[in-house]
Image (cartoon, rainbow over all chains, first blue to last red; front, side):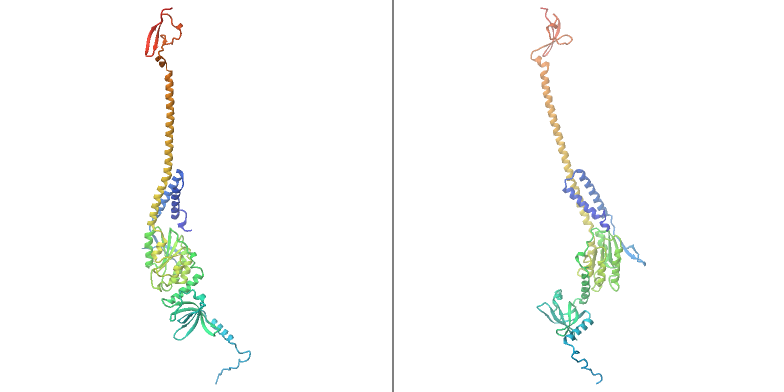
Length: 77
Length: 386
């Protein structure tokens, strides 16, 4: 299992957001439920935006030592 | 005559070989001594029979070799070869006993033009990979939509890596890029690429891998046509995007990979979503979300308004009813008012203390009393005692 498919990942946020919107649009919800969904939607939206925004490409290089152990070293670009 | 052949030594009714025996033995010798081979030569006397079998000869300046290619084998050929064409033919040397003819049973024919020899090696490796199911489309794994870690197997000095990094920076900078450096051409490159690919299994939390290099000559790209490299690609535990050379070069590595990208830049794009596009998608979702909430709240608001209207209406009705009752009571009250009776001409007599005088006996002769008529009160006196 990779991180991208872990709970709380970007894909989950996006999927859940779309489901929330669909439910809000399609279903006869009472106000409490609608507000709860809306709040969750706003939270997920914020989380997804943060993930998109907080981003600087990190580039590293794999180095294998004599014993065959791997380490990652930042790469000057 | 020193060593003359004793030609009659083996001659006896039992010793003479039959034609069938000789040709069968010759066939066994040929088939046992010559493995299946690739033969280079010029096609001559090509003839396709109604049965679908092909008969021709391969020749060079010195010799010629009779060939047959059965229909079950030649059906796989894109086209029949023509006389004069230089080809590589793959087949089994044998002896056709019926005709006592030495010949090659051909399984595969390739034109030598446009790098036929490379093609031979390529086709051979491809056949082996196909046999092992490595080119099966069902093996292709989808690339995860939002990768967090991408490994790149390529030369650290090549344009390919720079191109990939530039595209990732623009499209999906929230990713962790791990270069697994390797030489991509020259002696030992094949082994190095295989080692680098094997190392991917030891990188934790890897989502997808890109393997490749920029454009080059056929020889330069050859590493990626190696069967060993192709098998190493197939063994990578995460989806692999292959980008070798330019659009027109398709290597074995490309065929085995989960996704084939025409260039290294395209591979980087295939590995990632576009951040801007995703941002727009989030904007759209955000607008839809805001709009979506207005429906339930409007619904609730309408209910509140409706309830309010009903309360107001009920109140109004209650008030009307009260008012009606009040005015009815007022009317009845009014009718009972003693003033109304006085209006009709009656009068009320009261003594000085205000007590109503109802009987004759209450009036002493000459007694003063007060008489209340409709519009006021007057002082009065009872007449002398009769």
